[in-house]
Image 1 (cartoon, one colour):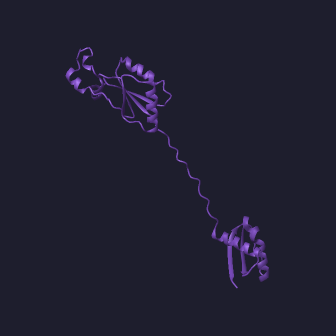
Image 2: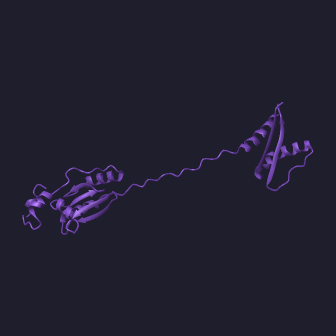
Image 3: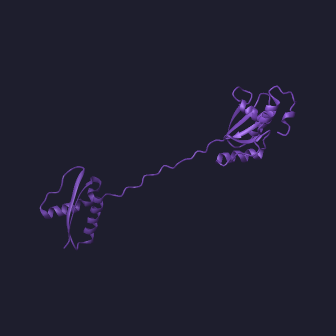
Length: 197
């Protein structure tokens, strides 16, 4: 014969399942049934072989004693917010080509943020020496994108790529530092220094 001793303190909500078993076994021993408004103690002595109902009750109590399995906590979904492409326009006062390029840019359906750099403003001498022959010049996320003018299809494709994080700097970034050194700030060449740029 196999003796199995089961003892467990369980919540009141489960007391109704095991209380008849407790009362029956307590009466057999001449014991009083437990009292208490919210806590019940289940105790029984089973002998092997036992009836199916008794075995099921014992398995229930044993399962409660081991503790119910914890439900997995709901995971917090990670939301990735794509960065809005940062477009930089290198310009100067009175640049009509810059105005036309910006008008073309604003027709896009893609989101973007536009900032401007006045190449003639103090502190921007480096940009002026590079781009003075080629404005407007555009960057996307700090990488060279376009100069002189914008194409509608290229605007859509480039901003879409930037939104997806796949935009790469384009070839052909202008650099007029050599011409700037030869021409000087007071050059009156009428644009001849910029030919080919």
